[in-house]
Length: 114
Image (cartoon, rainbow, N blue to C red; front, side, top):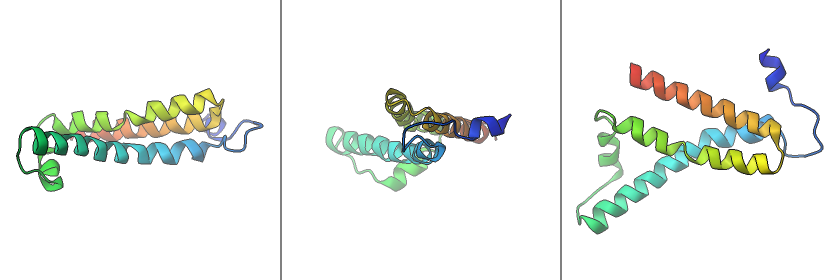
């Protein structure tokens, strides 16, 4: 059954491949993490006039509930990428985005349960 989902269906588009959706969807949450860090850095240094660093941000992720919030906010770039692929009718690439998002959600759930 999984073979049917991972094998590409015939398409006239050059970039409509599973890997075009899967690998960027795994990397987009990393970019989202740094975007969230940028917002918190800007808020703490400009608005509150406090010193802030990536190390303090990493330490704050160990507090209860903070990791879950930051991890889910980091994944918000994936639906945007999915929508862009869907508008171009790249359905095989959309499958890659969905699978990568599911893997990220399962990893977040496992981290929160353990």
